[in-house]
Amino acid sequence: MMARLLLLALLLTGLVAATLGLRSCGRDRPVTDQRADLSAVVALPNGSTMTAPKGTVGRDMVDWLASQDDSERRFELGGREFHGRAIEPTVESKVRIGRGVQILKANPGVDLHVIGYTAPSGDPAADMKLSLARAQWIVDALHEGGVAKARLSAEGRGAADPIGDNGTPEGRAANERVAMILRHRR
Image (cartoon, rainbow, N blue to C red; front, side):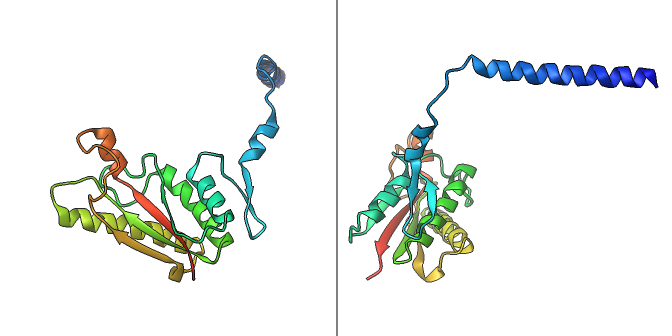
């Protein structure tokens, strides 16, 4: 019994020492101004807020919608949107879908057209099929998030309109993408 109590006391002492050690490690770092992050928080028309740092596609969408510009606007998401010839987007791109749902729900007078693309595979028919499947995957995910299906449309363009050099791995990865066109409903 005494051995158990001694072992428990030793374990608690080690835990307290580790906790204090971790706390003191944080004191060597400079204190940052937490208010700097507030510039990334934007108010949406329905009263909700979201985080959209300046320079991101989400922030560009929010700013464009707030400008009341009546023209349509195309947005390229950027980043690695798909791994190879996958239909389902990367985890990074899936996170953006939640933000898209927020933006679209806050702006019910806006429709979204999603255009899928691929890097060329040598089979234009397969490229068209894959690009449409990608665009439709995004449309379905937005609809599952609560955006009305009537506000969403999908199109596949295969390997058309490359934004990267298909001769390099980086360029091919950039061409495995979707673009989004926001339009105000008339």
